[in-house]
Length: 254
Image 1 (cartoon, rainbow, N blue to C red):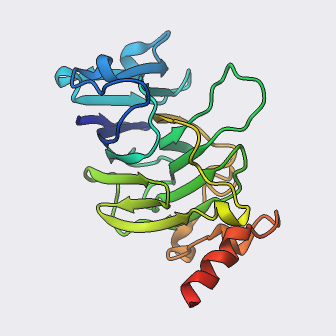
Image 2: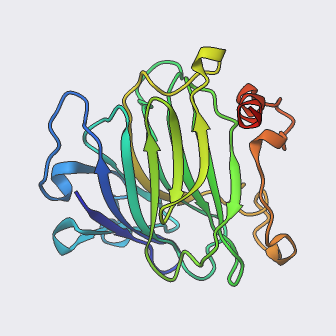
């Protein structure tokens, strides 16, 4: 199925979804937007300003304003598959906004936190400065694997494909068919992998101005760090180097 979603004005996104996966315990629907997705937040009290579904559900616009952000999720949960969203991000001054496409098993009503999650997050910036793309992986409630990089194009000018390929061996993040990150299964070596919990697909836009743009400092000159790439294996927050970093390095040296 294919579904777009758009970002406009100061905070919105366009996304088209295509899932090559089998939902757990159900058959995939070929119906419209509301057959496959449910709007989770951003419908009240200003639904027309934050969630707009047009063209028979082919195009969805999510908007952030001073009342709330917006988001939707798939009705079905999936265990493995390939998931693509076609997105166009917020143009102009997008500092403080966070636009996301992710999979998660998290249940807000559940006690405790042992969820799995695979994230694409796009951190806005001041006009004329580039977006930061952040990926992250949570396995059994443990994250801290953020990796940031700049895109090689302006994600606000046109739609681009963002893909998560999740199988028993790897999680591969791709942009327009180009792999940008691989998270390998090292479960046999004691590093938890995402293989037991089905996850739903989400897309959201929300206010992250306490941290998204230079740790909450909105006006920042990113030109000096134009080609910066931050890798969680470098342990930028001094949280301890994750075990899979050395395992991947050893495997590539063999």
